Length: 530
Image 1 (cartoon, rainbow, N blue to C red):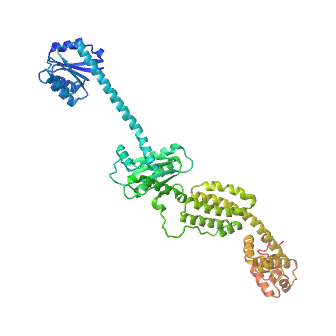
Image 2: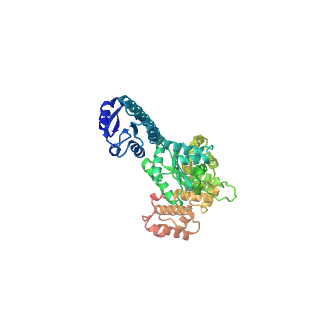
Image 3: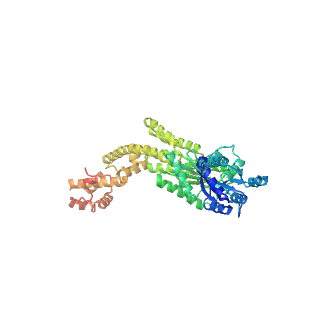
C-alpha cells in the first residue's frame, strides 16, 4: 500500500474526502491529514508519504509553495493538487514543480480515485525501473571482476586491442595511474596441481600485493598488473612472500616472473617479457623469482657454443670412477647454464652427451637407457635434467666399477702368484712383473696393486721375503744367513738382508735363531705365512 497525506484548510472537505475515497481499492492508505502547507511539510519531514493530495489555496503555505518544497526536498513524492480556480496560471505553475495531476473543485470521489490509480501506476512503474536498474547494477558488480580478468587476458594476448581500447577500459574500470608506469607479475605453479590452486595463488597475491590494478588467469598462469612504485626491492620481498605463503599452505613450488616498468598501454610487451623470464626458469630452477635483469647476458660477439671434452667423462664412467665422472658432469651442466642458450639448443647438447654415455653400457642395456631419454627431455628445468642424467651415468659407472673390480682382483691374484713363485728371484720388481710377465703398464699396475692390497708392491715383496725367512729359521735353526739371503732374492748381500729383517722383526736373523718364538708381526693373519 502507498501512503497518502491529505492537505486542506477546510475541515469539512478534509473529513469528507477522508471518508468517501476508497483508499484500499486504489492501492493506498490514508497516512494522515494536515490543515495547511506548514503542517503538511512537518508531517512529510517526520514520515514521508508516497502521495500528497493538497488544496492550492491555504493560509501560511499554499499548495504551490508546498509543491515547490516537496520538489526540492522529496522529489520522489507524487503530488495531486485540488483547486476551485481554473486559471491556467495555476496549472502551469504546478506543472513546473512536477505536478501531473490537477483536479478542479468541486470533484467527486471517482475523480480522486482515478487520479490516485494513475499516480499509483506511475509509482509502480518507477519502482520497476529502479528495481531493474538496481538489478543491473548488482549484476554488473558481480560480473565486473570477471570482465576485468577477461580484459587483461585479452589485452596481453590479442593484437587487435590498441591504446584507445586501453583508455576506454581504464575509464570503465576507473583505473587511475596518472601516467605512472606499471609492471606485470606472472606466476607459474610447479608439478601437479588442481585448477583451484590458480585461484588460491591469485587470492594470496592480491592480498599480499595490496590490491593490484588488475589480475587474471591466463592458461595455467596467474597474471597480476601492478602499479610501479619505484625501487623493486620491496616488491621483490612481497613477491617472495607470496611464493613462500603459497608453498607453506599447499606444498607446491611457485615460479614468479617480473617485468621491467613500462607504459600501461604497452602491457602486451611487458607480458612477453615475463614469458621470456619464465623460459629462463629452465636454467634458474623451479621456485625462482626471475626478473628481466636476471636474463640479461652481455653480447660479446662470440658465438654461444658449448666447448666440452666428453672423452674425460666417458673415460671416468668406463673406469668406474664415479666421483670423477660426477665432477665432469657437473662441469658440463655448469657450462651449459652459463651460456644461457635457448632450451631446445641446450637439450640438443644434453642428448649428444647422454647418448655417448649410454653407448658404454652395451647393447643389452642401451635400449632401456634410450627409453629414459623421453622423460629426460620432457623436463623443463636444467636442474631436473641434470639429476636424471647423473642417475643414469652413476648406474653405468658403478656397473663398470664392479666389472673392473673383479677384473682387477683377478690381475692382482695373478701378481700374488708370481710373487710367491719368484720370491727368490733378485730381479723380482714391479717393472719386471708388468713388462715380462703381464705385459702391462707398470704405473697402472702399481696403483692397482696398492688399491687392492693396501701395500706398495716393493713393501709387500720385502714383507713376504722376511716372513719366509722367519718361517725357515723356525723350521731349520742351523741354516746359514748368507744362504737364506740368497734363497730369498737378496743375492750376495747378507748384510742388507739382516738390516731389512731387523727393521720388520725387531732383531737380526742370528738373534732370531736363538728365540724363534719371537715372530712379532709375522703371523698367519698378515697373510704372509701359509
